[in-house]
Image (cartoon, rainbow, N blue to C red; front, side, top):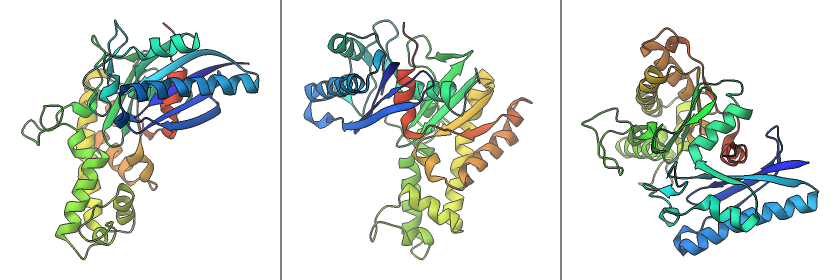
Amino acid sequence: MTVRLGIDIGATSIKYGVIDNEGRILFADRAPTRGADGQKAVLDGIVACARRMVEWCSNAGHAPETVGIGSPGTINPHTRRVQPPTPNLKAIIGIDLAGLVRSALGLPTVIDNDANCAAWAEHRFGAGRGIDNLICLTVGSGIGSGFIVDGRIFSGHSGSGAELGHVSIDWQGGSCPCGSRGCLENYTSAIALMRRASEAANREPSSELSKLRDGPGGSVSIAGLFDAAHAGDRTARSILDEAALQFAIGVLGAINLFDPEAIIIGGGVADADSQGLWLTAIRDNIHRHAFSVSGKSIPVGKAALGNDAGFIGAAALPQE
């Protein structure tokens, strides 16, 4: 059986796996990225993951057909090299990762942004299967977004399009590491939500949130924030409700521009929302404030493929 290989490069770990033509995972594993050990360690690790998959295929009697790579940062559409900003993994900036893996394995290899890969996976095999126009957002330590337009990944002229996390929802808001102010990521990423929850716990030592800190004066985790909200803590619920409105405002701009058929939300924050409180609040705000008739009823759902979406989508990328 012919199979496809996918690599999803993260700041802390590299997730990789082998899929069949229906997107089913046949093999998966992960390895540390080793960004602190320098560029050679990172690049050697990526190649080692690729070779590990080829070895597995050989032992399992499968023929690897192609390789796809999901990378943080943006990918230059002409050189296919990783270009800045890639603040969490600077070691790969300027590197032709696809060429590196292609030379090591002798297999056709392509690369795209990791959020684009996740969106492509959901479009091909997940919650967006059969939907040709959708927006997929991954809410974790940052906010990644991928747009599928007319059944194809949309990246824009320079490869840096569809970055909803760095669309400003408040031009007088707090500064963002990207250099702008009031970016959506500043308000609704996991880091932002944990900061807000921890500040609230410090202000209200008798609250449910305060009990969930990791020690006196410590921080509140995303799981802790949702646990408190599910337990009925008003402060926790207020934080999530406000963040849901802010998130919806950011997404509404994209809905007005692209008129997608569906919105899909994944990542660690969505996964922690086991009862759907946050997702429901986002959906309600989008429907309440949408400009168009279609926006007032657009499906807003949870991603289906979890942390595997990155390498699944990378493996399924069309070869150039």
